[in-house]
Length: 78
Image (cartoon, rainbow, N blue to C red):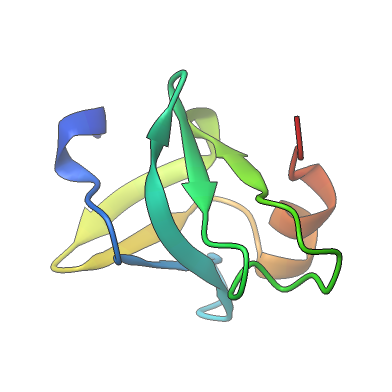
C-alpha cells in the first residue's frame, strides 16, 4: 500500500502504460495536485489525481494503476 507521505513535489506521474501524465506539485486534500505547466492541459488550471489510482512509487516516479489516457480522463480540476 502506498503512503501519501511517499509522494513528493516534482515526482513524475506516469500511467500503467509508462506514458507521462504530469508532475507532482504537492498533495492537497488527499489528492495529487499536478503542476499547471505539466498536467497535459493548456487551460492554465491545476489538475488532480486521486490517490486511489496510485499503484506505487518507484524512486521519484508515481506509477498509476490506469493507463495515462484513462487517468487523464479521470482527472479532477476542482
